[in-house]
Amino acid sequence: MLFFFGFTHCPNICPTTLMNLREAYDTLGPADRDQVRIAFISVDPRRDTPAQLKEYLSYFNPAFVGLTGSKEEIDRATGASGGSYAFVHKPGDPPYEYNVMHSANIYLINPKGEWELIYNVQQLQQPAKVAADIESILHERPTNDRRKGDYEPLGSGTRTSYRPSTRVRKITRVLATFRKDVWVDPLLATFATV
Image 1 (cartoon, helix red, strand yellow):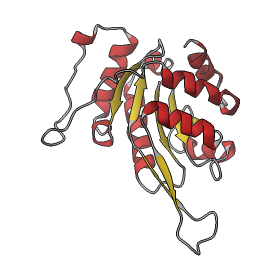
Image 2 (cartoon, rainbow, N blue to C red):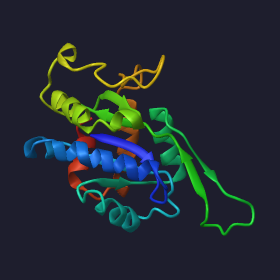
Image 3 (cartoon, rainbow, N blue to C red):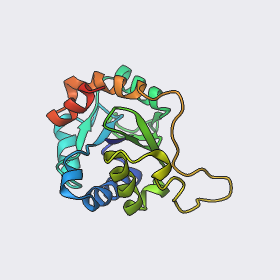
Image 4 (spheres, rainbow, N blue to C red):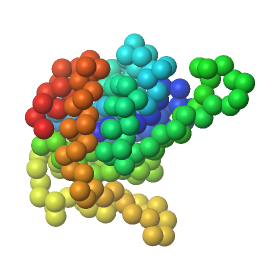
């Protein structure tokens, strides 16, 4: 499973991320695609209703799953993954006119419910490499056989995708609390295996 945090009114990061995820997903063979779930977790439950999420994600791929929850649930999920978000509202604007600043990492979780990799937006622009990472994880190749560090450098001192340290299962346990807001049974099965 790959997931990230965002909101449907996002002007650039979210649609770009979803297009890159679609390209990586489409690069996979049919059998591998059947095993992969892409989850978009909205941090804007006020505007991002289940219907809004479903419509928005259908522009990218109808197989992609939209999740949201209460502020407390979203805070637990973002906190467990090291993500963040904040609402930006200009004084005098109507209540529904606001922006949301949010972290843009994309998290890859293996079929055992363990974190494998975290991508930044630039790394996700290499969908063939992301697809190769997914295939490697699905086919349980040993870590040293994976193409670790095989991403274009992003600048001096910048890390490539990396394995998270101590939060291995915490995020999937937290995400399991979103079950009442999930609309796709295969994703529930993914959470149930953790």
